[in-house]
Image (tube, rainbow, N blue to C red; front, side, top):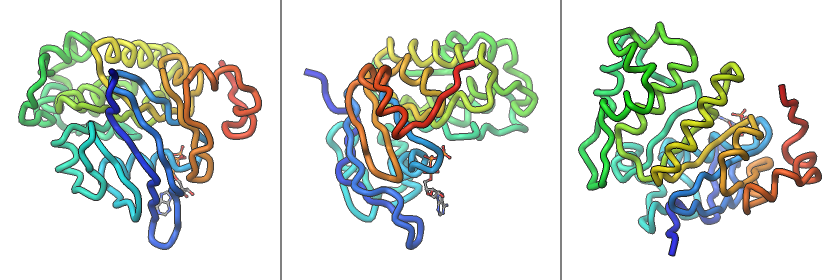
Length: 241
Ligand SMILES: Nc1ncnc2c1ncn2[C@@H]1O[C@H](COP(=O)(O)OP(=O)(O)OP(=O)(O)O)[C@@H](O)[C@H]1O
């Protein structure tokens, strides 16, 4: 039976006195892609920050394959197997592509097929071509590939992607979509935060919608795709280009 890779139950999180997440709960099934959707300010990034330990939940439970991780340090959580591709990519601009990957390496977890620089270059041949180039000189799409590669170097059991398509041209966005599908084929469990609803629902199995810090939907991604009412109420209008 499929296991729960990441489970949030009744998570409440604050920035100072501002109560941002109100009883958020959902479960990512192992090997699935879960699209975390919602308008600007709905609490998606706050949710990611709470999972990775940048923010301590005031209440609630967060589990990685059954092990409680809520409130642990970001370093611990990362070592236990949560990988993050942060919003805005955050690569090291003055290190080369290869160096960016090498510094992201972590002590190997017992996995059947650990990631290494060679495997990342197989996944992204473009990065191999540019391996000696300073990362700051890469295009936005290449930087996004590098950010994903850096997260994979930690052999995450769950990979969190925060708005990977942000600021990228449509052709590159499609490539990001193909990358996510390929990682899923390899069994990677993924939480995908996206403003680009079409991309997210195209690759996702599951979907969760946040509205002002509350979960207003959790179910199959296909249930959201054609649910005009749900979309109008919680996601606004999306203009496909
Ligand atoms: N550091 C902070 N201090 C105080 N309030 C914050 C902080 N960061 C975010 N917020 C507030 O928390 C709420 C949720 O923001 P969050 O960034 O999680 O939303 P989001 O769904 O990720 O939206 P976006 O797509 O704009 O990133 C917003 O009302 C925002 O103003």
